[in-house]
Image 1 (cartoon, rainbow over the protein chains, first blue to last red):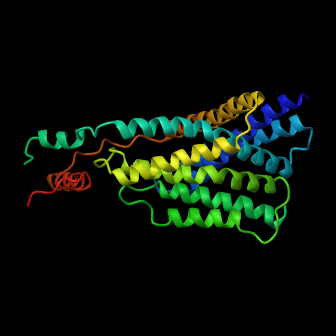
Image 2: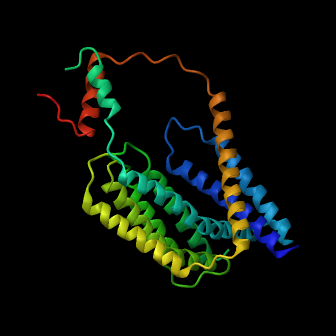
Image 3: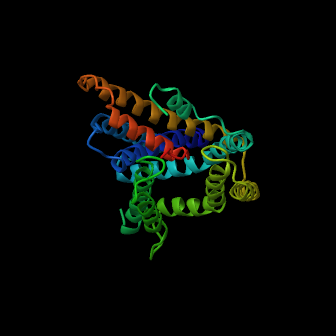
Length: 118
Length: 179
């Protein structure tokens, strides 16, 4: 397979798998009695398995735990690649936030307008 | 999988769980274990006795390289958010220090980056992968919510509860309560 195409497919599969892994870990980290994490976890696990299969097919390697590790590693590298783009967007948002004036708080205005409030 | 390879993934998992824990709770009182758990995860991932095997060694090396600009970027972003007039009035010192760190981060990134045209396609597909993962997650959440039986409508707040909520809002929006 064309190495460029292989690199592009592995970046896609890796970032999808790693993001799904982060979603599963975030669900674990925020577990509470009102959570219903079963279906989202199932969906995220499916994305991880499908991405690993795609990665294995692209690299002509067996879809086993080594392929899973390679997919996740590719995901880390792909996400590190797009962090500068995210940071660029964030820098513009920080610039807007730094230059703006603090707005009047709508919650406090709401409290003042409530009947019976002092 | 070797012990050192497992240590890298375990450390990353603990760090992500810690960051997620930190995001729970109200903004003025985050989960007390979030930050320590995240730092523990980073320590487990980065401090080791032996070099991890491939591909984990590449992951750790790339993470350490990226940390050279990511660390000032993260600290700078936090300082800018503290100094900008988002929740409080402008605080000049954190704001300027934050912007200085953001400039340092961009300089650091610019000095080490080596972007070629084929990278652009890789970025786009990596973004598509992230979008796919979040789309599947959103659809799954929607399905889970649709399958949840509806609860009866909650009754309105009592006068005592209303006063309590009002006092919490006033305290945390920096408005002194009347005596």
